[in-house]
Image 1 (cartoon, rainbow over the protein chains, first blue to last red):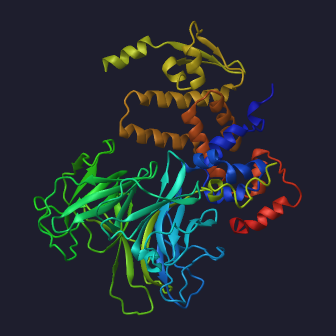
Image 2 (image 1 turned 180 degrees about the vertical axis):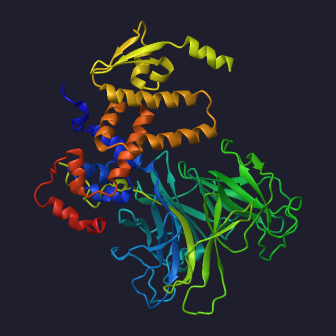
Image 3 (image 1 turned 90 degrees about the vertical axis):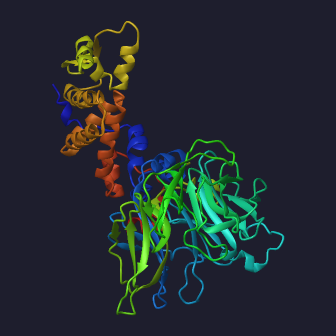
Length: 408
Length: 163
């Protein structure tokens, strides 16, 4: 009788394509495009496969944006921190033609990185260009110019005068970018870009009646959130939300907290912060009742399934936490804040800024072994990043013409 | 305690017959971890003897060993058990050679053992992630069907991926 064990078994196409390949990281799949025409179209152009592959997040890392030193022109100041957080890896951006890369030669030409989502990085220069880029597939796309607005002085395009936020609309399977012009005004205007439509559109519904804060924005489950303020004198704060699906703004009331301690005009570090905490929207506030020290904070979490009205239900976490007093980049990794601070250093030729992780309840710090780099002036932004195969040309209708060529 | 012992006494025993005639007597709760068997059992008037002409006895035995482990642990699902299961799974796939792994995977797929398929394909993925294109073709018996010149064109365009 023949011995079954010695027969070389072959796996079915379904098992290979639906079970094995999606478990591979994009770096392997980029190579395996060459196996056959079928694999090529699966990996580059099959949105079902790309979504499957996304369910297995690989190579989670941090994307670090730095200001490079002038004498290293090939370095664009974009790095990954490896998954084990031990190394800084330079990201090659030189292949991006016409791309507003960080140019160390001209002062002020540092890009602003808006957001990192599903492996897509959205960034803009200070002037005209907005780019969506997938570092894992090296695909990038320049967005069309935003729609002109009433008083669209060139200065107002400056990132300092607009507010950009990027995210994924899961229901519509679309990536969207929201731009709030002049958020310091009481009645700002806004427009939204959809990758699928490949165009901008004015947002009419639910524009806020108050100013919107720049620094404080969070993306939770397809909804973007910012801190808003109707009146500093009366401490009338609110949360502004933008639903990426319905493209509507809404104002949400804060939980009942007493903020009598703050001055009316001067900047106070105790202004409320928004964070994403374990897949929920969190509000970090200093309240008189629970917080005795300046950096003490109470964390309120907004319940996920409460209606669309301004009143939402919030749950207060019992434990008081301590807000770190270094520079917080907004990124949170495994419940730890990604922070930086300056250290005194005798050598002027190295970056004396260090990066560390901070656990706000225990106040434990983990320092990252990335310091004293000669090629960096300073770190400016940090994002959570995970490689993905998300294809930009799939959304905009394959303008590259590259995806379907080899399948017929 | 008493409830689990009654389940054991009232549980139905199934006979599974592999392609090479080897039979296994298994508790229903264990065998129904496999979707295909679950479907057969749920059909009315099903018999206690189930013939599986596509699965060899050696691999059916291994699949059932996995089912037994996971069916037992299902009754009290707490976090500690989850850890034990993970560790057990790791041991289970650790030293499998490629032939056994593929036979086992095809058996698990045929029997719709979704969780086991997941475990085994994870193992295959970890084995092939660093391989070259040619090695992948050989492993999965795939012939390149690119037209002359196409392969070079893609390779050239994506040279960074092959560094």
